[in-house]
Image 1: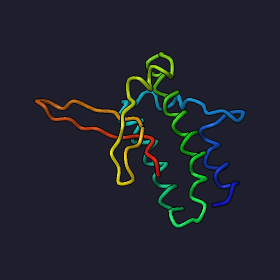
Image 2 (image 1 turned 90 degrees about the horizontal axis):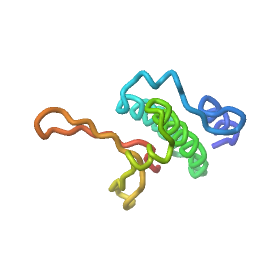
Image 3 (image 1 turned 120 degrees about the vertical axis):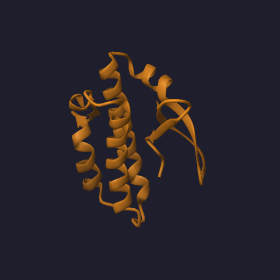
Image 4 (image 1 turned 180 degrees about the vertical axis):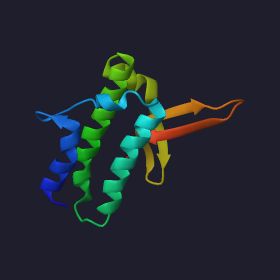
Length: 121
């Protein structure tokens, strides 16, 4: 996986080398915001899944996760640390427990719909 590809994929989520919020997404629900980020990351990870140096996706994961938390923080006008406290969870995967972000939506009587963000690949 070429380094310039990682830089190009990180570029929409960065400004002057640092992750930024995506203000245009703050009008969406929390669930929709997480789904958008997750779909974008999974698309890239799926495309490069056979690459021998897949560990380079760690940089993209970090940048996208920071951008996601900054976007949610901007939406609610709170600090990023509060977003992490609100949505942080331990996800059970085939490779063992992983830390990540999870948005849960209550849907009527006891029915819950949840979506995990920032999954490790």
